[in-house]
Image 1 (cartoon, rainbow, N blue to C red):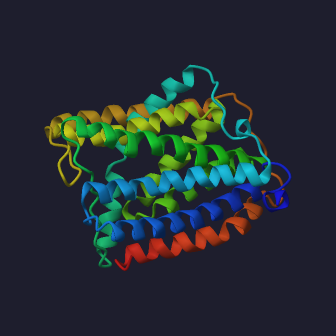
Image 2 (tube, rainbow, N blue to C red):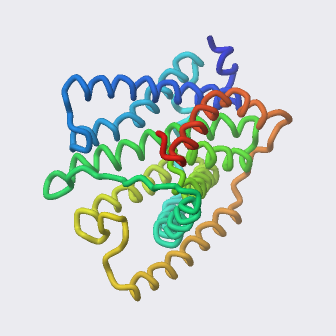
Image 3 (cartoon, rainbow, N blue to C red):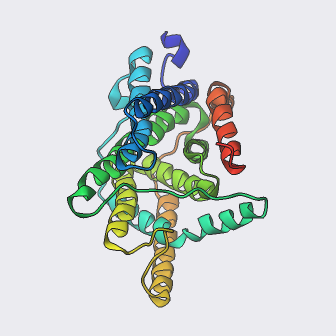
Amino acid sequence: MKELFGRNLCSKTGGVAFSLNVFIFFAINLIASIFITALKIPVGSDGYLYVSYLISPIAMLLSVLVTLNLGKFKIGEIVKVKCHPKYFLIGLLLIFGLMFSLGWTNSLITEFFKLFGYVPKSSYLPNVSGFKIIPALLVIAVLPAIFEETFFRGLILQSTQNGAGSIRSVFIVGFCFALYHGSPEQTVYQFICGCAFALLAVRSGSLLPTVIIHFINNAFIIIASATGLIDAAGNFTFSQTAQTVLVILSAISLIAAIVWLILDKTELKRSEKGGVKSFFIFASIGIAILSLIWILNLFGVA
């Protein structure tokens, strides 16, 4: 069975794990649908939303466990924690920049797709008033931050680096991260975030900075919704002047973080012949399924 994943962590491992994750995700999604139907949980209710939000983290956890078990790999090969403190600062600059200076990309892409009849889907949060914000933070911020980072910036990134090289792996992870979320209007933003998070993980040699900033990103949305900083449409409720200042400061922050990461002296792994091809061959089934879902979402079929 180890031959399926490769003798060592490599591009093949990453590709197989990605396709495996897609199968597990849809299997859990089917089970969740049966569960929701059997218990007659109303669509759009808090129970329905929490079940929906739990599917992805559970799928990623199972994908990592199956890969580690069948491939006979050690958790330490994909989950590295120690890093220089400066990478936490870089991470904070990075997420501040991404959240507030690139939000326009979603609006721009949405308007572009609307020219072809695209109708954007609404994103719903469960009730986050009072103490109800606690389970929301746990399910929507903590769990995705841990398991998405472990899967994408841990398993997939560490595997593909050993073949595709560090730089190519950053873009591979960004592509997979954006495609996995299946949201046409957020694809560009999620690709940029996926690449930026992967670059931070490569330079720091640790998952901890990306787990923290991923949590901050998700937690901010929940807290901002609970406090009225953003409305139901996802727009900020404070003055235009304040928004302009925030965008300028965050853009400076993003540029500083990216330049800092680019100029970092951490040694990068070089690509090997066939490394990129190997990943995409073994990830092709998962990519094909998710691409179909993305297209169906674009045309409002899914």
